[in-house]
Amino acid sequence: METISQAPIQLTAGAVKELKRLMEEDSFDHSQFLRIGVKGGGCSGLSYILGFDAKMDDDDIYELEGIPVVMKKAHGLYLLGIEIDFQHGLNARGFTFNNPNASSSCGCGTSFAV
Image 1 (cartoon, rainbow, N blue to C red):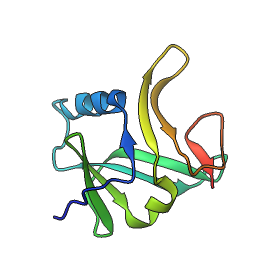
Image 2: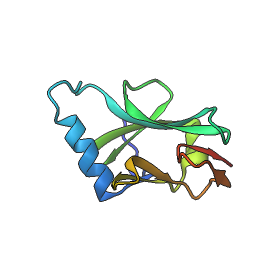
Image 3: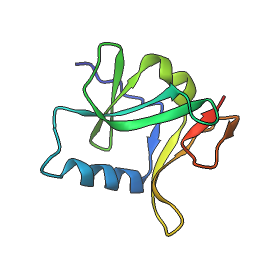
Image 4: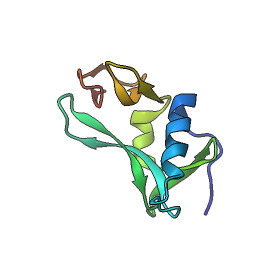
């Protein structure tokens, strides 16, 4: 399994902390990777994928702050330079995406257009 050293994405300290907390739960399957990607749909055209999943043949593998990450090679075009954060605020709680490639995004923050 080859790991690519330079990941096209960034995780903030808040995102790393929350992901590691999830990975420490007893029910976590340690054979899985954090999958980051995009899929068609959502109110702006594309939606983000963020979750734990098995590695597939056409995935690139990265390691960010000790977290194994997989991403489809084709998704790099849409995600290059993205920053993923985790918010604990009263108005927003959950993962947020700051994507410099998005020409517009929706109010929910999980859908975007390029």
